[in-house]
Image 1 (cartoon, helix red, strand yellow):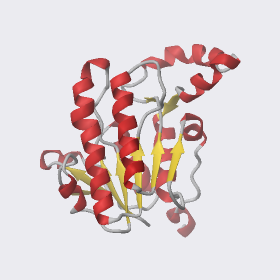
Image 2 (cartoon, one colour):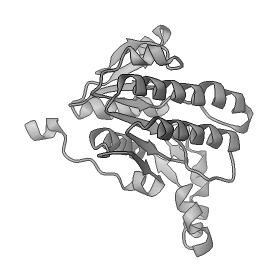
Image 3 (cartoon, one colour):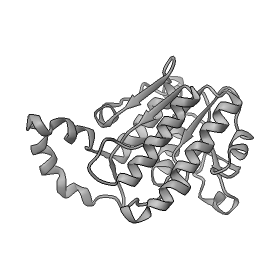
Amino acid sequence: MRDILVTGGTGYIGSRLMQMLVGRGHRPRVLTREVSVARVPAGATAVIGNALEAASIASALQPDTTLVHLVGTPHPSPAKAAEFVHVDLASIRASVAAAQRVGISHLVYLSVAHPAPAMHAYVAARAEGERAIAEAGVRATVLRPWYVLGPGHRWPVVLLPFYALAERIPAWRDGALRLGLVRLDQMATALTCAIECPPSRGISIVGVPAIRAARLPPSSLAQAA
């Protein structure tokens, strides 16, 4: 079992990831504000802190910690460009600084697929977060979904026929795959795979096709049973 600290662990993707990690025998810790402690999923441990402050994050880390960074602006849209800078980018910069200070073993970053023809401010903030990781020399896994389908996030299903068509047209295929849709359970599975199987060195990039294809090995709980 790994020591896992998650920022954004009470959100849309984070909550599902917590369920999966706990179900596989992990005991993740969730960095959260005091007012959000009640939202930390059962089986996870709340750690009071501020995901926008490197010192706060660093105080919850050890050298063998896997830091999972999921902080982001809910329901991103072009109107939220300022939040992408002040929340999304500021928080990953804080996580990178904390990871570098403590010398942690692995950083998992939920980024976004790019290049992309839309959501330019959002993509720019996430890409800048990736650059911060690379410049810091932190061993990391970067996952690049485009849109994650799940409860309250299902409107893009109407686009599935267009995706299917685009994937069959050579000139459009790469873009359709890179900017494809993934399900919430696929996203949680890919994140869990990233946590349990870190790269030996450098940065591993996981795009939409790999997120869809991710499969988990048997958990320690299953093996014990």
